[in-house]
Length: 246
Length: 222
Ligand SMILES: Nc1ncnc2c1ncn2[C@@H]1O[C@H](COP(=O)(O)OP(=O)(O)O)[C@@H](O)[C@H]1O
Ligand SMILES: [Mg+2]
Image (cartoon, rainbow over all chains, first blue to last red; front, side):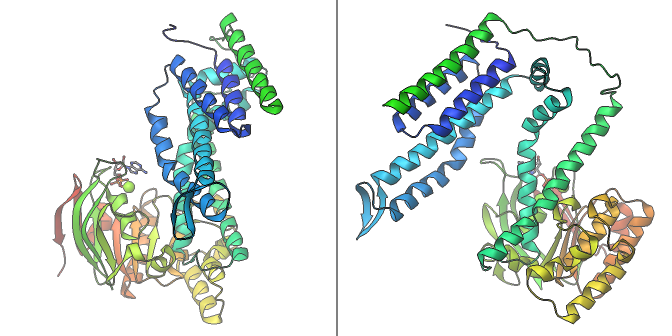
């Protein structure tokens, strides 16, 4: 048993990218189930506290049930499992699709959470050493942290727009799209304002005061990291190969 | 016109109640101030009043109609809400367009409404800024812009979340004058604020929130 696996953040990034790519492309339930098990195993290796991710997955569960019902209602595929008169409420096909979406979302949420087991400083450091410009690497890591905050703001903005007196349900599609386009402005300005505040705070702490950045802390990829990167890349290719041919 | 809150409880997470069975009635002829420590749930109560958040239990009525059965669009025509962060409610690329947005969205562009826009631009000292890009306005200007845009719909009631934060002495004066003018026109108000001077000048009624309940509810003027 490996008590706590401390991998280089770059190795983690590669693993996460492999897992989420697979999650997007795989269609067969059996493959997705196997992938979920693999993801859980990796999460356990990294000692991820998965209760938070499970909370997130629970939130989308009702949406998924709804999707399953829609798929059952509007397609004739599969055998009906539950029906009222001639109307199929749940069919095997709808259930299958619903479970598929659930698996996919669970895998992506879990794998993304793996990144939170590295500090954002380490992620930045790792990316720089891969020759990504410091500013860009920094922004990637900030982006990861700011996402939940932005989500709440976008929700407020959407509400504010409706409070201007728009009945979104009642207007035709074409005007609806135009109306939605108004959301762009506050979203962009919120990102810009965050950036402005952040850059001010950084300058005050002498970020980029010297042209060449010297880091006391350098990350070194160990054999273990290379092994994991190689392993995840080859596993992913293998799965793709099998998936295409069988 | 009145807003009636009946036994409303709310929590962002299960098992955590930010507001506990709150009941109160806000009337159009009162200037109500809502105060309380940071995190006491003022913003949450404000968002419940305009239907941005839905109560976990209890109901809120606007003129006797349950907000849970009204669309945000309907509520917005009766109540104006000013976010603590004005950036969240500015949608266009010039100050002038922002005020016409409600009319644009609702496909109503007769001349009396255009006159109202001009009047509001003047009242809120926005005419000199009419072609400016809102992003570069100062906080006070953004707030005046957001408020003026809300008033285009002629709401009968305003809910304002900490409108004086970030404003200097002069700007606060200007804001309280504007609010007094709206009140003289019969617009009811619930203002979330800590600002003592502002409260002394304007409040008819002060509601204090603490620990998720109303700790006191006092009328200051007859
Ligand atoms: N979107 C949210 N999700 C979870 N908790 C929240 C959210 N918004 C506010 N809270 C919590 O609810 C409590 C009341 O917040 P709020 O209504 O903003 O208080 P106030 O405006 O009086 O400072 C606080 O403890 C805050 O942390
Ligand atoms: Mg607040």
